[in-house]
Every structure is written in C-alpha cells, then in structure tokens.
View 1 (cartoon, rainbow, N blue to C red):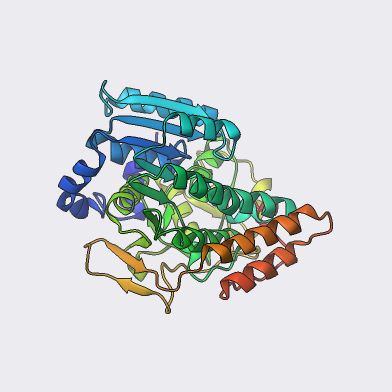
View 2 (cartoon, helix red, strand yellow):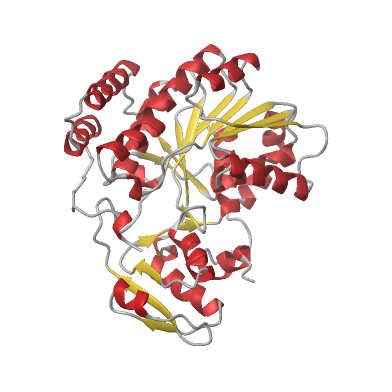
Length: 399
C-alpha cells in the first residue's frame, strides 16, 4: 500500500519536514497566545486544506472548534480522524455542521454563538474544470465572491480577532475564471481590511489533495484504469501538512491586508506527467507510453506488465503553463519570515467598487441570455490584468 506522505516527501516536495517548521517554532509563543482558549470557526473544513489547517491549529489548544462544510461524509471522516489521532483533547468543544455558509441556518448558528474569535474560510471552487459554461461560472462566482461578501458583512456584526480567507497562486496574473474570481475575492477582502482583521494566502498545488489530478492517479490505479496527464504544465507543490501551516501562520501572524505565499524556487516545479511516472514506478511497474487516451483505454491492464499512460500537451481553456505567486506591480516583503513572503497590497479598491461589480454580476445572472464571454469581459474591466483565452475545450472532456 502506498504511503502518500512518504511519496510526497521523496518524489514531489523533496522535503523531509515542513518547509514552514522553522517559522512555526520561531512564532510558537505568539501562536499559542492568540489561539489558546479562543473560539474557532472553520468553513470548508472537511477539505484537504481546511482539515490540514485544523490539525495545525489544534495543538495550540483552542477553547472550541466549529467546522462547517457542505460535504457531510467529509465532516464524518474529519471527526473520525481527529478523534482517532488524539490531537484535540477532551476540553475542546467540538461541533460539525453539514451546511452551506451562505444558508440562513448558518447565519442563525453564527449569531447564536455571538461570532467567533478566529474565522477561517476555505470554501471555494478551486478547480479550473469549474469553468465550462454560464451555469458553472455563476456557481463558481457565487461561492468564491458573492457568498464570501455575505460572510464579510456578517463579520462586521461580530468581528473576530483573526479572519483568513484562502486564495490561490492562480490569482496572480489570472488566466482562468477560477483564478480571476479569487483575485476579485482578494480585492474584496482588501476593501474591508481597514475595518476587519483580514489576511489571505496564495500557495502552490497541494500534492494529492481531494479532487486533484495526482489524487486521481490513485483512483485510476485502484480501478485498473489508464492514467492521463499533461506534460507541458509545471506546478509548484506543497504537502497537505504544509498547506495547513501556511494558512495558520497567515491567519494568526499576518497584519490585516497581507497576502502570504511560500518561498519556492523555480527548480522546485514539476510536471503532472513526471508525478505520474514516479507514481507508477513506485507501484512497481514500467510505463507503457500511449499516443492517445483512446489507445490507453484500449489496453487491458495487467499489473504484472507495463502500465498504460498518455501524456500530452494541455489544450483546455484556462490552463496556465507555469505558476507565479506575485506580479511585477506588487510590493513584496521577503524579510519577515524565512519560508514565507508577503505581498503588501497598496492599490486597494473601495467597498463601493466591489458592490458595483457584484450588482453587475447579479444583473447578468438574472438574464437567460447572458453568455460566458460577458462575464469574462466584466471581470477583465474590473481586474485590468485578466488574460483569459477561450479555447472551446474544458477539462470535462479529458480523462
């Protein structure tokens, strides 16, 4: 059986321990002061990053932990994982709620608790494949932007001491609607940063996170299915544990308006095809390189022989062939932490500008004739550096 943590450490991150460990140790006292005895709300806590944040936070002994997620099964497994690891202790008040953070019942729960000391929001459409047509785009923008705005307005009534809302490296010079939506989210929370204590983080792909392509390799292998991956798309990777560490430090240690990112070097990028090759070899097989998905599907998989794979160039809308954490126009602080850089945002939009954009979205969503291109145009006008190119193909057409 494959040990995922060891595989990530040996073949992907090439790190035997978290790259953020030295900063965590250096700031342990501050983290303890800010978390111990406090009430914590984690939205989207059943996912890979949200749950990793929870495991990073629990050793600092919060008073209570409330976790909200629309994935009821994920919350069940999170509870089992926490209880089975003996990381929480018996004194922490622990509750999970399978609900959407935009629902009325969420607001009822939040007000009944009179808010929380620490709030972290990991609820997001995070996949480029979420961009297909006007319906998928509306769902994405509602979750990543419009619903997040509702949460901000609720926090104005019950202001936490720390609020974190996760972003993505794809928000830097965005080329897909998901990345563009998270850049809008960044602009939106920055508009509130003088009245709410807000931070965010852009970070690399989380290796083998739920729904990711590498996670799909495990599923394909378990089901005796061929593996397909792009060979021209390079990505930075952090481990699930590291994703929790960066979000915890950004949430607790950042000044309002800061965007955190990991200090990763260009030579640490990998292609998905290289990960697939390492995975198949780790499972004890040579690779049978096929010229198409169709050829790979035609092969009968006998795990005593070569394993069929198809690696090709990316040709779907929204894929960026490289990653970056900040733009040339952004001011960056590389000195405060050894493993983290910080974008200090100076060009901050107003709440009124954000409200006008959201009203424009709603107006377009109300029409049955709205096209995806109209949404892209509206986003481009707001962001200024949204380089979206429609290629007519999305990831739902790929293996």
